[in-house]
Length: 358
Image (cartoon, rainbow, N blue to C red; front, side, top):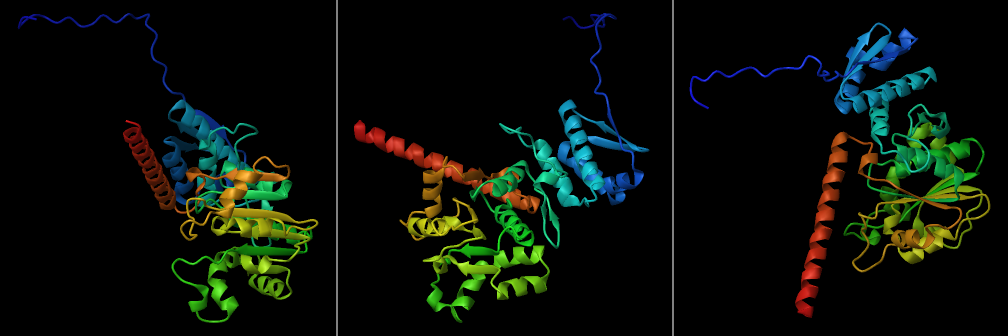
């Protein structure tokens, strides 16, 4: 094009349809008192929803205007309605519930059923100190599975609630007199130490390994009741080795850190179940602390029992981590590292096989 040549403006056809703008979604709430609890002090819950779903939420009297991408607007509407429904049920909303509602809205649609909900009463566990609701869709299925199956395996990384929810369900069963006792067991596997070198009697030696189970109990029952039930045997917390030779009837049984059982130990405990008993087995197959060359009883049991009637297996993932957001990022980073490490080993193995056949 020559310098000085006039450049004409493009001709715009007035009949060309304009690109439609994203319309706001208006959500109306009847109770202004509940609405104040929904938005949180200084609108902090709204800010959390905006940040988590990349939307803008603007209060307009007793309505909320949601702006943003179409799919995100719908998710935000679902989150707000879910939290409001929870408040209508007389339950509180905290940052944990807000994060849970966002997490559940973002969950991939399950193959069967529907996404979880923080207002779903059917999945709620009632204990004397708190009402516990699942905080991810997987947790919701896990709670239902604990109620419907005699043996449930909860597999996944730390922070997914697999042990906490199993203890909560057991406490609820004990309060409702559905079982006579709770039995909490853990394998006493040490990182570089032997029990014989630790100070104290056998109870002193194993108690540090059982501390997380005690913590969960004190979170659900008054302290004096935990002590009383421990003393009269209604709640028993013990090392796995003490289960041999017993028949555990009318009991809710939980085996935690099951990845550190041997196949013999796992079979021993699974065959201890007596009449009117149920069992939850929890563990993380990426955190096996057994001596080199010793197979994991959990890994073997899951392989053998998958598909057996009365048995259910719930696999938790990085998206189910409900602790501090940094924990989720840490678990994800380690997961990516492990996958990369596994891929590199497979590449090296194939390269070696290629050299041997060449």
